[in-house]
Image (cartoon, rainbow, N blue to C red; front, top):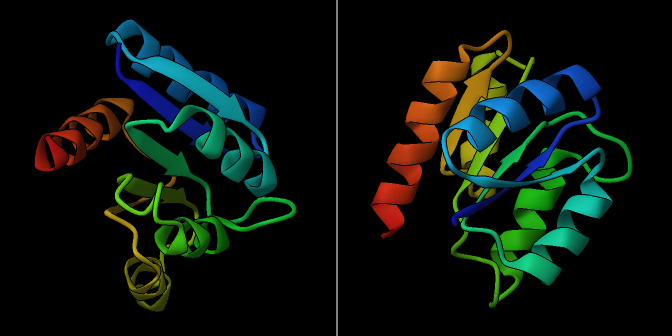
Length: 123
């Protein structure tokens, strides 16, 4: 099974994303802050990560920047899923190394499509 790590400090978002991905056959590791995201990524080497931008301890941007400097983790696709929808926020996300950027509220079906597309590009 393909493992996806999801980090968001909103338990409802975590539950929704976990449900949608699990129903689609993915193994999901769900965490609630950026520090846990980095720790779990190092432990499990997920195929893809979905990160909220505004989280405790490390933001999704900070996690992305750290991932991109780690030789073992730098190639993991990262989708930033956030309420930050200004053009400069999107630019900042991609500049940090994000593979994709989605704003909340979001369609779970579209998120699944983007997960599949990101995984397809790295296959």
